[in-house]
Image (cartoon, rainbow, N blue to C red; front, side, top):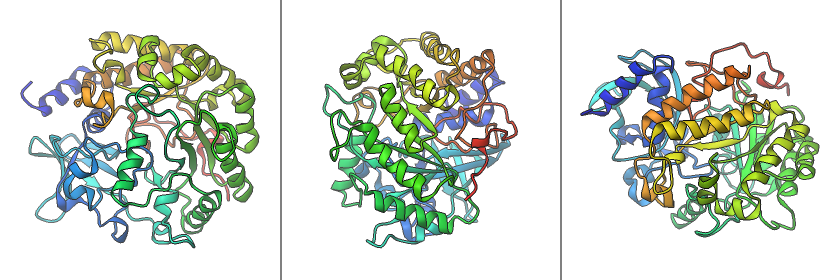
Length: 446
């Protein structure tokens, strides 16, 4: 179409029921954004909350390839507002790509804006440095390293195990760079704790609780790499569960507790519940049977797709269907060499998976695929999936939810364009706004 602007405007015209904000957000998430030096942070010494690299790199280059953005981190997220498209407040996770047609830069008055094809398309807001990031743990570690917050401060992201025991080409998920991200931060001399100590996590949460006087932090997620055998003598349910147990004992009711783990047997899932976890994310990654085997070889080998899905359904008996929210990686359906060749085929497959779960009251959510260059799928598909796929997925997702009478899942903040804070896909931006009637959507009392 001659320019990215023309492509975006064509899709906004063809899919008018998808919020225009979501079209730009999906394009930024799938393809990344470049940063002028005027838009970079001063790391933890500045006034802007810097990118924490909380689990994956979510970049289109390795740290050495990012230039000044590797030395002065970009902001964790950006907010888009206004401009010629009159964008409502839209929170976008930062994925750095120096070659992107999108660029964040300051104008002659020092005001940040987002530029596409050289034209300013929106104002850009950056997250202020939270007070709790200005304080360190007793051992000198930063709160950002131990308990970073994302989604504009809504979610505390606790990656307590920063590598994965699915290791090597025959086991690692083909789109995942968790192990490389660990290696590149260690190689760069950055602090990047492999296994976080429970007491460190509690101390970091105490600092957040003390200085987050507005109670903007509403939920925490416990996550990390898969544990296929034991870690510190514990299986996966007990390893991640011990953090939940400690958090709930020290901060009862302060945050919504979530855990991202493998699809585990029902007895293990019950342990999560017993430890105080409220929401369970047993991610199914990609729906298609063949693609699951090709892209998730470790999960296929140790558990298997059919058993994985059975365990997801079984977990609804423990948590209730509404509180089981598996993630999939939106876009890998179209990754070469094994993915679908057309958007129609990919959407049909993904919608089949949505209907499978939603018909049973389970509402999946998704992360927009970022083709990180150190992963097999990232190397083979540097452009990711077509933007049209992502826009049509938003449309299919909302229609499927409506078909089964479902509303936005708990633990993700408010839905609706201009309201959503979930930053790594636009599914919450694309759902109708509603009052926060669910008890989990209100800020818990201290």
